[in-house]
Length: 212
Image (tube, rainbow, N blue to C red; front, side, top):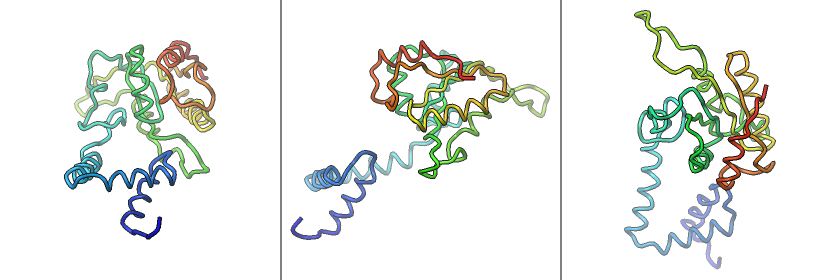
């Protein structure tokens, strides 16, 4: 670049913060924004702010939603006795596209990775364990009317971090008397659920196995 344009450099640096975006791609995106009309640029900025301010985590499964409880957790048609644990919302959407799973989900929002400073307390493992624990008794003596979770499917990606996270969660769940299964090896080691085709995901779900 012949001249160091600070606003453009700053915009480029922001795009580089996105996963998988390198220096050249970030620069290309920044120049694309320069070609926006004033209204398009304003709409782009409003969309980013709206996503940050209006989207929250479901208080039950931790999936992203605009409501207190997401549509999956609120659905009476879903099997609330089966919980599928995934790394992020994109993996959940990938499984939903197969139309083969009728249970509910729990989103961890990452995997355990000491090298990147991601420890178990930074994931939603605590919230998952709370869902599996026996129903609490209210002050009036009545028990919360929530279906008892019978099976937890660990559907983290088949990567080193994904496998380690699955084993860690499985060990925590084992004493709680719930069936813990792992999705089958229909997925290639090192692959991501987000990029798997529907047939591969369906076979992985159908061929899940007990982890402990």
